[in-house]
Length: 456
Image (cartoon, rainbow, N blue to C red; front, side, top):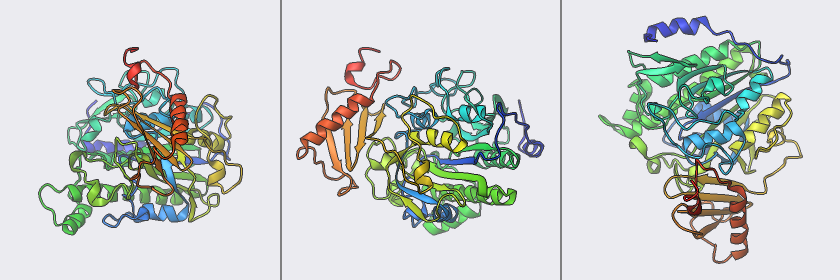
């Protein structure tokens, strides 16, 4: 299907009629989850960023609760999002790495996988995802429309999403040719806003998987760009200008969403969440050192140190979440699945790893906590990590070495993970190694440990 950029305006004006499978109740809150792509813990103003302006995101932090120890599913895109969609950590998720398929797409979720979007839709929610999918390939059993979303516009494939001036995007399951090569982030945001305006009288889950500030670093040379070009004294190739412009553009999108909710009178019944899928990147000219993108934490994207997996997280819900509140409780992506269920009055799913954080959000007692948190990473020789109270254990090269040495850090006294104290704490090391064995389940499609390579 070929379509010009101008013709999209007509599509935006027509809207889309959506049918929910189960009658909704007027008490079900709306849920908006804004998920940035490769935005670091320190890339936003309320986290200490000084070189990039993010007034709308900072205002969200003032209006609601900010989490100081919130964690992504893992250190790269697809498995991190699979953790979110399934309510499981990467020792149990069916997608554990960024494996691509030709001509476009990634390793798919199995047909048997039920996502949180599907559950919400079954219980009366209109569901939309706008941005990047990355959990299947076109024609597979794992596209947004087969996994619970009634509306999708954007990139099916995360590799294709590296280009911000694409020749096509996807509208549900239809490939839309874009001969004019528009700036994709703005076009995706326009579709998201149209979906939002169509939801005034029905509960909805809006998942905004914006591709910025992921590489490649490409931006229109508009007024935002010109401001940062002057600030950083860059001309020609301008990686710092591009990155800062992308983050500020994301901030503008956040402002649009918040303002539209107020116009529609929906701000009192809508939970807004803001986060990132993993730590900051070096690709395409990214310079996390220049921007202090990891917020003084160790590591970036693809690291299981804190800078690779600890991400910004804000929750805003008018009259339900206390403005200016802070949670220091370690919480991961997989907790959002049961949180959304509890919000919507849906019976809790069984056999998931997540725990609802609704008590924390509402400032109530009774918050259940994980005995430990677990991550695994299937690139760079294979890695594992466990957070157990103040302790953080990291193992590298688990795919190439039998029983590799475990590094141990005391995050209370050493949040930058500079001092390995494994030798001084052998009992803690043994406990974390036990947790790693307990949390990791073998998956023939995703062998992690050296001993599993022969089983594939």
